[in-house]
Length: 416
Ligand SMILES: *Cc1c(COP(=O)(O)O)cnc(C)c1O
Image 1 (cartoon, rainbow, N blue to C red):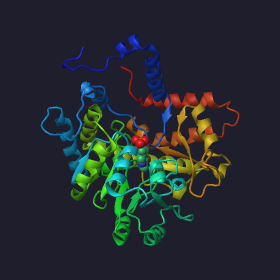
Image 2: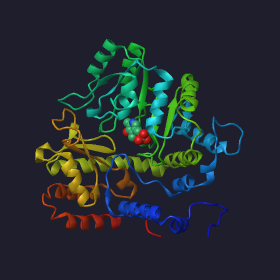
Image 3: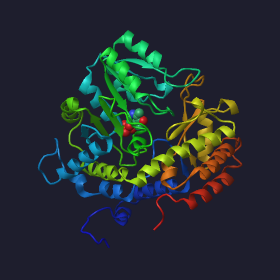
Image 4: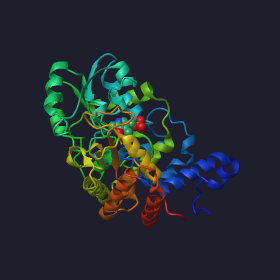
């Protein structure tokens, strides 16, 4: 029995009414609990976030921006929390996802056909940074920059030279598979030199910024977009922060240009996640995420797998498997058979097509939420090493047993 007058998710109701969907929900929970989750963009949200997500706020149409309506208060509280946590002038909590927030950011600052500079996809950029199959590549003239072949770090000289040559209206930085810190001050300088807007797509690493574990892009960027469901550990969705001068352009680009009504249950859940992210506990978490990623990266290096750029400053490592003669797709499949979930990834200057990739990407947000530390990362590195080398699949069951032993010591969503 609930002690509060809350009306919310009752799993038994779902199981009775729709056993087919209920069993999918259960098997996904079982998968989360019984394996090691190293997808760098995933995390385990808290029960409080899940309760807000599963609440009757889902029913509410709240088109437009918050005013005096009682249900607007969740959004107003969330906006205040976001501004305080990130030291931002303005926050918009309404974007449904990272891709839709990025459409809004483009919409606020550039017109179709204009030039935008962003990180090339094979070097770690996101689909919305100019992929030919995405709105960004279809509607905008994209100039891509990348990393240097020798250091595997962003080539700032090349960024500056390309900006001078192409005079972009907007420069985007941020990536999905870049393990190092980004020099936001350098990007600001380049943007100022050519009169461009600086957009930081902080989807991957904003949780580390919230936890004060890495420097913030907010003082440097005109606009910062970020998903709320990665290291930040909130519900699926996105937020946009910007300077006061851009507040009205951003708000109009989110609604009514890009979206209709906001998902109020998700907005409320974002507010909850922002409250959690402002705690000392979360700051300790964010630091441990990085310590763990560094330990995992070093452990994999010891097993003969090379971390791209030599290591990581963040929550993820990109691992080059060429030294052990494997492609990413095979490694991903073998790990999966041993209940280790990670993804194949292209590495910079990859000789393999994206469908195979020479690397894997590993991230520590989820395992750190489970309470794992450096010693556990050493174990995971050796489990990955055994799994990727398991050519005929005969070891998968034994490795999965060891995976099981590890996650039993650090349960995700403990059984009641
Ligand atoms: C995850 C991510 C996004 C997109 O988020 P969705 O919610 O999947 O649309 C955008 N940009 C970057 C850099 C990301 O990592």
